[in-house]
Image (cartoon, rainbow, N blue to C red; front, top):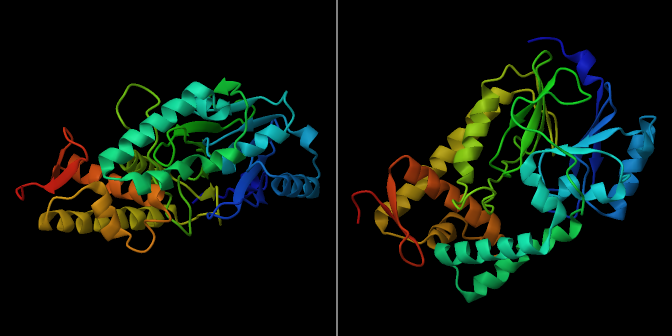
Length: 325
């Protein structure tokens, strides 16, 4: 593997606290043609003070930053944009736009999508109230414009040698920054060492088909696995240097969970919520959105592989194993 010490020394990790269960988030300051901040942290005073302190320890002030690139739209990665100078250009995937602005029309669309989906997945009135908490994290979001769009294979302005990889799954807006010459990836949440990234269901950003996020995420993982990488700089936790083996392990765990879901459906047809309760009997009530995202992802995977069928012309949807109906 190549020696990437020189490039690594130009990438500085700033670790910022968040109010979320995932814990601290990593943002990165990259010294290059332009002093570039990759991701911005969550919008709290504590986060901003920590950011300024650690930036100062690197010899910089907020005013020294030339541009910001965001890996995806989740609040722990973009909220602090509201506290950065308004003139700073913000780069990211085009799907960030509605999330950054949170216009009333988009919020209405957001609510309609989730209400309809949750009813189809089998949630009753009590669970729908829990689902309303989905918008709670948006309190830590920014209200900011995306200045420039980035897409697959774009060169990153101000960062010679870096290109854009589209890596959806955890978020529809997700990108990673790849330096082929040094084997480096600034990966956001596409790969985290100590936990698996959750492929979260989201409203479709184009057309009317629901994104099948686990299928997207698996594709993104395989895409990264095929690269010659020395280090992945992750959005949470430690750097990752055993990229291929970690991805192999994660994909294997997903396959084992899908096998478990298939065995459940061989016993009897079920709604997604019924599957979710069996998969996550202890935590589904307090983490209904996360556990349902994972469950629906496994069901999408099994349907894609032609192991199961779904009756989606009724409410709620019923999933059953092929040959078991």
